[in-house]
Image (tube, rainbow, N blue to C red):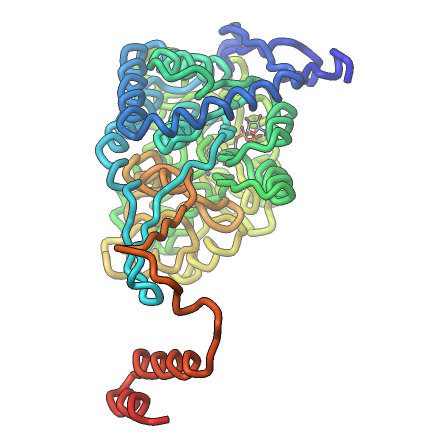
Length: 520
Ligand code: NAD
């Protein structure tokens, strides 16, 4: 390959050696990073591989100490990091801070619980009681972590921390739209004194991500769109690389007639507009008991009117930011335009707002929708609330489950038992009652979806387990017998003995058991 062909593309589809980051809300340049050349990737993989063994062998206590120093470094730099999330994403400061809080809490949680989660588990084995058996969690080796731009802290820090704690080396590729935040994170990892080569950052677009997979990492943790996830899963399947996929969604809230209207309106507006709707788990479909659909929409519109202050910058008054990418804005505009052209009714919003670099979209409530509309089928990833009246809660559950996605879902009712019963029917990774995205960034709880929203889990104890494979040890308890029961030869007496044992041991009644013991 010649040098030009080795240089990956940048954001505009042009061949370039740098990725320039600009504020979506002002167009101001924030910085640039060098794109990692494709021909540097084999050496990056080799470095990670050679550093990983010693990192694992250094032991959990050492790795948790490095994690503690990383946490300290993050905390010391937190104003800078939060400031960069605000600038690079165009997000309200409070939301950036709350994401940061989840990360710090995650470190504390892993430091408290990792030893227990990863401890060897002993198991009595009936077939070989004279042996000891135990299962340990073994790191895969080199973990490749590819992340999106919409939550550049927690979606990067959670899998990186889990991979490092369990003894993997990490190659981290942040989104091409969050390179500056990615760089700040990488700096804090380096400040932790992590051994050389255990953690490396790589910059580039999907082309670089795909080329990294071709380097045969031992584990991939991918967070991003379902379309990209499918491509990565296909390649990983071909290469038999274990993979965790955290993908897109089109989540639903089901509101019953007895719901607390005020709480529901507040909760649903927040669950839909948090991060300007650019959240995999944001509420994009709201199925509401017909009798309260109009009053609920009016209250949601009132909540928007009163509490949503779209803007950019460090002001604490700002409650909603802009759409981070041009492409995302276009998807939102297209879906709303198409729905309106097909008969949808606009309750509020429905347009790009003046100023803010043309990137802010007004919080929008729509109703009179049909399931065929793209707005009701495809991920919107923007500040749009689609309200559909229903005649029974079961109709809501059916509609919620009808799409291929399954990340989160919520039920809003004063009847706890009924709510829990409906939550049990939702085909999702997370179901919640009278709340929606509460479980999103909680370090103690496993995070992930089902169906087209992905598989595997991050965060919680499962997040650590996900970065490891089970390795089973068996060893004689006291001394090795001359021969084991199951070895050669196979005389008929052995067959009869085993047959009798099965019938006696697994008999379900005493009559059967006695017959097996004394019968033929
Ligand atoms: P994306 O799929 O476009 O990109 C995600 C990452 O994958 C980026 O780093 C990108 O460079 C890389 N990439 C792209 N093509 C690749 C390829 N062929 N091989 C390897 N890497 C490749 O997603 P995005 O636009 O950055 O993020 C938004 C999407 O992420 C939404 O669909 C959202 O729902 C989803 N998401 C899911 C979760 C979750 O936890 N389930 C969380 C956040 C975002």
